Image (cartoon, rainbow, N blue to C red):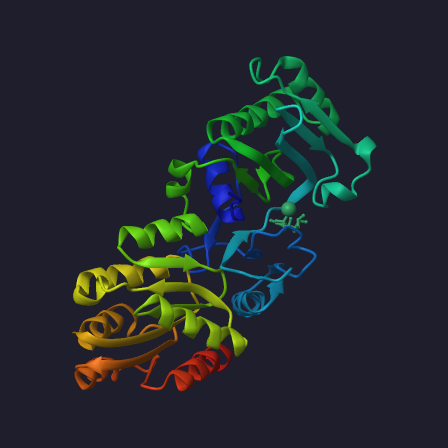
Length: 364
Ligand code: GDP
Ligand code: MN
């Protein structure tokens, strides 16, 4: 599992590696200092070059940049979130990583004094790589070589390598890469970026992180609520009363050019249970869909229950919601949803799909 920068930095911090003062766009601190760096949270690298990382020096510029970064795609990927950091005043950018070499089944330390750029673009002679015997760990000669190659003191090299090694082994990582690793004006080593790949099913670590969002765990979570769910990765979460209706909705939306985030099949359980329906919507929201399209046709159950859950979880929020429903207690169900500006109600499937795309394009 590849981690977002913000998740990776959370791990670095837990292991005692310094990171810049930072926060997610939704949770700004009460005070901070400009300039700050606005950073797109996507899983692809090279964000800097693709325009996903910008230095800004005031509030207006920051908000403008957040919106522009959220609207662009980086190698086909839209940002799930924006991470903001106080800019580091640095004198040097280094590169430091530990990677699991599958061929030799051995971790390898990679270091370079030319950080900040893609390591692929750095000439071989400027890169140091040293295999580490996992049974012996970080032997002194390794630390010495890294220190002299990076032109930092033995103590500094030892401190950061120990922390990185701890993280790498305890979290069962395949890769821990810090690029750039800043040397700031006070001669501190500060991680400017974090690229971490965890191996296997390291559930404990996943749970601790800010986002919970692998396709696996989406499906597991749905199962836990006795609902069929598939995570696709786009923008629109489709929730339908039945697998067939869901697939048909997905086809129509995709044909119109909509990007589907996930597909949920209510399978008759949640529809009788208000709390269950609310929980389901909360679970989907953890995976940050950009909008919802509900499509349900209840001939035995009442439309009221799901409508009430939608009203309570999504009514009045900034998330665009389209509800196509038919069946029992239709008028009462509509009345529950009518007060909300962000909820569009229709009985017609075609209209519902068209509206979902319109919402996506033009907002509520
Ligand atoms: P990547 O392009 O996806 O690897 O994103 P990084 O987080 O590595 O950022 C790219 C580049 O932005 C870095 O190499 C730095 O040159 C610059 N940058 C990132 N954070 C800071 C910062 O705090 N201060 C300054 N001055 N530059 C930064
Ligand atoms: Mn980087």
